[in-house]
Structures are given as C-alpha cells and as structure tokens.
Length: 508
Ligand SMILES: *Cc1c(COP(=O)(O)O)cnc(C)c1O
Image 1 (cartoon, helix red, strand yellow):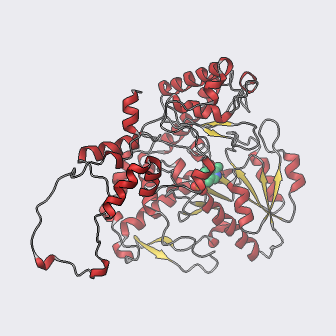
Image 2 (cartoon, rainbow, N blue to C red):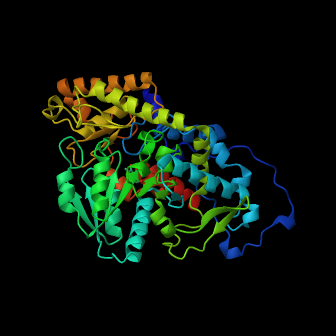
C-alpha cells in the first residue's frame, strides 16, 4: 500500500481538526418558546473538545476505518465450527417488515397472528427436517439451547423418579460448550476418548454408561468434522441403559435434507439458526437456537408455546410440567424471521443440495491441502476439515497461529485455530457451500505460498501480518478488556503535548 495513504489511514481525526471546519450548517431560529429550561449550573461553560472536520473528511475517516476489518461481505471467512454462511441480504429486509418489527411483545393474540403463524410454521418445518416431534425456538444461542435441553432431560428424570441420574457422558470430540452446559446444571461430566479415526469408541462408551447416566451428549458432525458411522448402535446402547441421547446439531448445515436425527434415536437436539439457517452472527450476537424433542419430552418444553385452534394462532402458557420460561417472550424473533425466510426459499431437495455442497467444498479443500497440511482424518470430512502444519513447517518453528496471521496478508480471514483441542496445532477450515471454486483455489494458492515461505523463509510467516494497520495484538486482553471508547486523554497520550495544549486552550 502507498505509504502516504497508510499514514492518512491511521490518522485519528483529532489531528486533522481545523478550527471552524464543519459539515452543513442550518440557520439558527430565534424563538424563545424553543428554549429549554436547563438549570444554570448544568449548562456547559466551555465548548466540547471535538475534532472539527468537513463532512467528506469525517465520512472518509470512518469508511477507511471500516475497511480495516475483515468481514463476510469483504473476505473469504473459512471459520470451522462457527459456520460463516452466506446470509441473503433480502432476509434483512424481511426482518424489518413493519408488521413484524413494530409488533409489541405484549400485543393481543388477535393482533399478532402473522408473527404467531411464523413461529408456529417455523417450528413445524424444523421438526420435519429433524424428525423430531416438538420444538421450542426460544433459546438465544447454541449453548443456551444445550442448557434448555439438559433442563428438559433433568425434569424428565425427576418425574420418572430417576434423580440418581447425575452424569452426562461427553466424548472428547464434543464442542466445548457441551461439558460446560453439563457442569452449569450440576451434572458430573464423564469424558470418553475417540478412536484414532475420530469415532466414538463403543467399548469406552459401554464402560462409562450406567444407571447414573442421564444424557449422552454428542456433537454431530463432531468437532473433527466427522459423522459417527455407528450412530444407531450408539443410541441403542444409551437407551438400553435408560439414558437420553442429546445431539448438538449446531452444524446441521452438513446434514439437513439428508438425514433426520429423530430416525436414529436422538431424543433431544438443538439447531443454531445463526449457523445452519443463514442468519448472521459474530461480534456476540444476536443469534437464535432451538431444541427439538421426541413425544416423551414434549410436556417439559419451556412455555409459552404457539398453538393453532379453529384456524387461529394462540399463545398457551399452561403447561404444568414445563421447565418454565428461559427467555423473554419468544426469544430473538427477528433472527427467527430471517431463518424462516431462508427455510421458505428452500425445499427438502434444495436443503439437501446445500448440505452436499458444503461437504463437497470442504472435501475439495481437504484433498488440495492435505499434502502440505496433514489432515487428522485423511479420507473424508463433512462440512469442515481439520488440518495441521507439516513437519517442514514445525521443524522451522512455524505454528498454526503464524499461518493464520500470514493468511491475513493474503486477504483471507484466518480459519479456526487450536480447536478441536484433541488435535495438536489444529487448523479447522470450513468453506461453507456458497463459496466458489475460484475463491477456494485462491485460498489454496495462499496456503501453498505460506507453506513455501515457512520452509524457506520462516521469519516472514512468524512475523506476519505485514500489510495490516496493526501487528499481533494481545488477543486475550482484546477479548477480556476491550477498549472500544474514544477518549481524548488516550489520544493526547499518543500524540504528546501538542494535543494537551489544544485541550487546555479549549478548557479556558
Ligand atoms: C457454535 C457451536 C455451539 C455453541 O453455539 P453458540 O450459539 O455460540 O452458543 C455449540 N456446539 C457446536 C458444535 C457449535 O459449533
């Protein structure tokens, strides 16, 4: 990038300030009736110290800043496990339709027929896709869905008089939220190891399961990007021991339209709308989860629920065995509306096609990359593949993090790194179904270049990124103590006394 532009780009606004410069100015109206009765002691005595810029400069400043970010709208974003899918922009328009967006959450049923029908219908469609009997769309996220599902299981066992079931079995290939959920509800987690090909070890499962097991909690596909081929045998073993089987279906985008979990013995499962059903996520939400359950567990679902009587949609709260409310009103309805719009764009066939394309794309990258980035599972993957840096790279001390950082220089968002935990130096890549072959080929080209660099000139990879406005950040501090507020004193510190003087002048 041109050096001057870079310098311009990093300007913070304050140092571009020129006295009297501003955007459009309206004429002042002299009208006493408009004066506000602000007590004298609260009135500002000095002008606020704000940068004075023309509209063009201000707009360009913020637009430049926005371009420093990587986003789905600007870059290939191959995050594994967190599925950054294509989110049709029309869904955003639909979620802003006045009838939905302006509906009061306490509106009478008769005034909310459209929203209630949407929720009712979305539940029916999702039940059909998953082969489940009933569903709630209230959870706000995947982890919240797991929490809800485990509460439902707990209520079920309590009613059955089996409160001694205090354990949840979690394979080591499960998503991290699974054991976290178990612990939050006071369950004891029992970990079981995977076999070397990434499948659940049936013998380990049989050894771990007992009349203390409440739930066997499976991530399907698991975090290695692999489907459990023995799933029917697994659910049979669990049911024989009297346990329920929970499926974490956050990444159902690899399976929808192809299989129905209800058919192979799943008792409870969750979906992430903000992964599988094409609603945006990132930056902390909002998302939307859901759990589907079989007939036996329906009475424990959270209330309220939408029912249909005499062709009218009604809110029903009277469910004596329900676990209660888990979210205000009906959850994140705006997000559900986007997911519903996506579902209406699809048929069973096209959903299946979407899942197949996700699998084809991930396998394409697996085949292209595995020579220089050995795969945990060589032969195939579902919607994502888990790779590692090869010996040529590790012997030069090039780590997964370095590869992720160097990808930024080549214009790609980094994949998920260091997850799943059971794979050392994991690089977890998920292209999603909507990326073109051309984009994936460019990504492969960048990965190959990084491999060559790592072999012959490792320092360039280890010191990446080189082309961005910031170097390596303290990622933990950035997440735990984010500094997202502009503060004049921070700027003053950065710019030194020049600004201090200006500030003092203003204060006078
Ligand atoms: C993302 C994800 C979750 C958690 O979902 P959130 O909406 O982030 O709470 C759980 N399990 C799997 C497999 C996931 O990919």
